[in-house]
Image 1 (cartoon, rainbow, N blue to C red):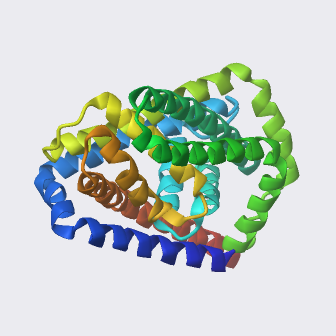
Image 2: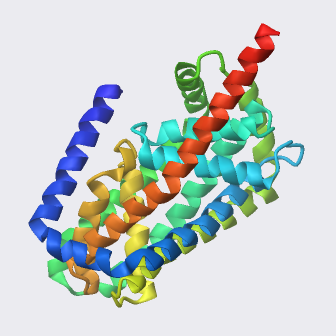
Length: 327
């Protein structure tokens, strides 16, 4: 597993570097530089409400008996995103970090992980709806264009992989819960959760269908609003692009990144997808690569403080635990 992560990270970095070199650093850097500090700060600030919606989607699917409040789930979602984007864990490590954070905020650990599994399921379902809408729009735009057939086939392959991953996740939730438990014990010895109880809690979560539907709706809103952030970033950088084409591009980018879930941060995959898709909508490849760089800079600007705060939180909990043992 560690070898696969290392290889995928190195290959992804090499691909991203090659694309930047091939397109031209100067051309890519121009839009990045044009956004300025104020524009970049606004782009980063735009991400915070998106995290709030994602946290609410997780919170609403948990039964009301949960001791944690909405801010606890928003914080858990923030740590989950930061770990996924910045740490070499692929997505599973981010899920473990997020679940542990919500449990530390007061939610019983089995319920924290059960609600996270349900939230992830509704998130994938919402992404599927968003991506299918993007494919329908792309097919309408490219109708009768034989030059774009190869690109369309590539996108369809990526979406098919997302469908397969979603179906596999829905069917293998209980084995994945056990796998997450073993990973958590490896990452944080002595903190294993009773994952048999997690399975019981998961059944209870799914019985509240109205809450599951609300989680789906909030996750769908989050996908759309998050895609709108890419449009905002390009507008702040002086690049004029329509909102609808940008939503289509982002829906397909999200799908391809999800299909490559084993590549930490989607390194290389995200950059290659932008180079592939942007010209279909009249945008030069350097604009897509510039947007990818802006996204990664935003991930660092948001994720690094979150991870530092999470580490301080974990260190404080460990210190208090050791102090209580000494007493």
